[in-house]
Length: 117
Image 1 (cartoon, one colour):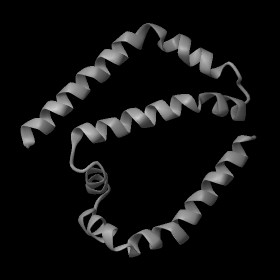
Image 2: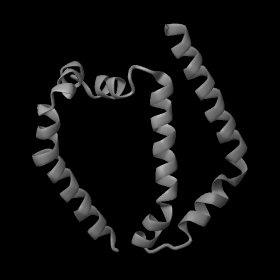
Image 3: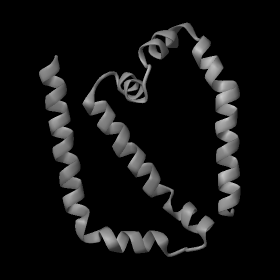
Image 4: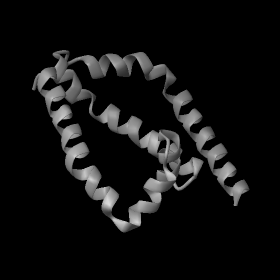
């Protein structure tokens, strides 16, 4: 699969979302309050995360994990099969620090959420 094909599929998915899925979502009564409350991109994300820093942080960690898991497919599309190994080698010494940072941010976010309630 070439990068052009990936971009074409991505553009098609955005078009289908904008033309079909989004109007259906806006018409669902349960989601009307969400769309009314979410006027800006930040407020949309905040409402989607139930106004919780812990949930927002979980979304971010999940997004990073999904991106890393797709590195092999991206490397094949770009034509560099060793891309994932190169990235792994570059960040190998930072692994423990990254995990400690994730843990610290998770604890701080949870304490912030507990303090608010």
